[in-house]
Length: 133
Image (cartoon, rainbow, N blue to C red; front, top):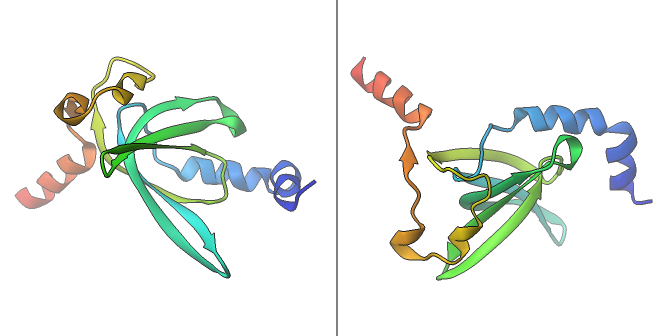
């Protein structure tokens, strides 16, 4: 049994649950930036992956989400478990109004057709209030 699995299942399960609670709430259609820890050689750095959430699935320790972005006109999807120790932080960039829980139809769309109807984001409202004062 690897050290990670043993730590996650026995000793550090409560730490992982606390880390899950720190993540912002998001759903399918929201645009997020995921900062994950990458080990290259002896060094560790953060890698940013920004895209649209296609789905959020599971519950508890098995909960995960899939993010899709376009990179050089090629679609790239990554699936992250909420309980991963390699997740550093998640930023909520924008929210969108969608009528589905799974947005797999975005895989076939490109360009303007792949845009989602954006919803007014709470942070934008707070910025507007600060400007008024």
